[in-house]
Amino acid sequence: MTSTAIAQPTVYLVIGSSAIARDEKGEILETVDWTDDNQPDWTDACICDFRGAGGEEGFKMLHDALEAAEANAKLIGDDIVRLP
Image (tube, rainbow, N blue to C red):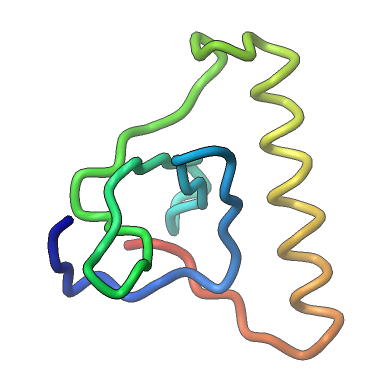
């Protein structure tokens, strides 16, 4: 585990050992690294796309899940912070 200075996004999904979030440009990023305080370490996060194990359908589902989670966060009054 490592330490990171990158702020945590408002919304991220955890699937298995991966954390998945959006950056400011809307790209979906994934990390499998975690900080010593059990937070996702986004330092070396990689871009997710349709070539992953879930294929095009899985990627669309990730996109839709992040859209819904961010919309829900907005409804409850959270400001949406994405990864830089």
